[in-house]
Every structure is written in structure tokens, then in C-alpha cells.
Amino acid sequence: MKNIRQILQKHGFSFKKQFGQNFLTDTNLLESIVAQAGVDKQTDVLEIGCGAGTLTRVLAERAASVTAYEIDVKLQPVLSETLAGLENVAVIFRDFLKADLPAFEAERTAYTVVANLPYYITSPLVMKFIEQAEKVSALVIMVQDDVAKRFCAQAGSPAYGAITAAIARRASAQILKTVPRRMFYPVPNVDSAVVKLTFEPNRIPVRSAKMYRDTVRAAFLSRRKTLENNLMHGFSLSREQTQEILRRAEIPEKARGETLSPERLAALSDILEQTLDQQ
Image (cartoon, helix red, strand yellow):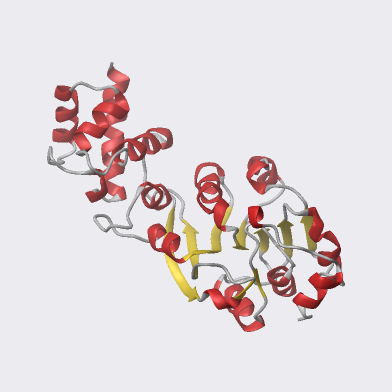
């Protein structure tokens, strides 16, 4: 691996805080991430935020193809050098959050996302795949350590929240490794972790994906309030209606949203869907 610091200096590149740029340069770590992602010559990879191309290069050496998105066009000369000689890489200088995911998937059968994500886009990007993706096999992503713990949290724990439940409907979550901040250049203020979200068809069945999203959003509306009060506010229901829904779902009236597993939230969303359809 070429000396990334020297290449960045050679091309006069300066880091931009608004893009959350913290690059990985340790070859052993990069190879470990790619190996744990299960990338081989049959894998098409999508990378988001390829930075200086260090992870991109390791991916390309093992994958069938790599499509890499990068928002900072100033990295173009850097990537031309670090990815030189690789014919299975396509770099697209665009904000992936604004990309048309269905159009991207229309040209593919299946793909795996492997990325050292800029911290500021982690949650909206993960939700983009949870809500829109049909052909993704897995997300293997570097995120802040506390965010990784939220993705994998159990119901009732302090880290469990709306994004945990949203992910669980479609994917299982597992922390693969923790990565100390000193492994990045420049060094960020927090430690990170590599988390794998493995998508499973019909993992938690629901009558309506939209109603499940609305139920999760309402359940976590306010942690200080009971689920009953949050549902009343979130769905404009009377107390009597809400109590009847909770009774049918076999949920105690004083329960709080963060105590419900994704499976119980799915059952609650189905009952809400039936109830609201009848109104």
C-alpha cells in the first residue's frame, strides 16, 4: 500500500470536517474487514465514502467489481493514483444519500456494501437500505462504537431504540470488531466498530412495512411516556381505543416502547393496521 499521507500531500489535499473524513491506512485492518465481509470473486461490492481509496483497493483485489461513491471531487487525483491499474472499480463522485437506489439495483442481481462511513450519514444511510433496498445481501460498515451498540441492542437496554427495531425487521446485526481511534488518519474523537447487518428475506413478517415504521416511531416518541400515551399521540387514538389495542396485543397498559422486542412491535403494528383499516 502506498504511503497515503505522502499522496495526499502531493496532491495538495486538505481534509474537510463537513465530510467526516477519517481514512484507514492499516493494511492488516483493511484486509480483516474485507475477509469478515465475505468478499470473493463472485461479490459485487458497493462502497460509500471511498476517501483515499485504501479500502477500495483491497476490495477490488478480492471482489468481482467495486462501485465506489465519493462526495469530495478533490479526491479525484488521489484516487487516480491509489486505484491505478484496477479495471474492476468505478468511482462515482456523488452524494449517495441523493442517489436513486432502485435504479442502482436495477442493474444488479445482488451486492454487498462495505464502507468506512462518514459518521454524519450513518443513520440516514442505513435507513435508506432498510426502507428501499431489495437486492442487498449485507452491510459491513465502520461506524461510531456507540452507534454499533445501538444497532445490536436488546429490548429494554439503554442503547435499544427506534433504529434498532427498524433494522431488526430486515436484518440481523453483529459487531465484528472494535477499532481504536488511533487507527484513523486524521485521528477522530471517538472509537469505532465494524458492524455487519445481514439481510434476511421476510425476517420479521408484517402486514405493512409502513405501519411497522409508524408503530416504531410512535413507540419511541418519548421515553418518559408510556406506550399507551405515545400511541394515542402518534396515531390520534382515544384512550379507550389504545387500551383495547394493547389488550389485543397482550401488552401491559403501563409498558414503555423500549421494552418491546421487534417481534412484539411487529405484532402491535399488525393490530394497529387492522384497527385503522376498520375506521
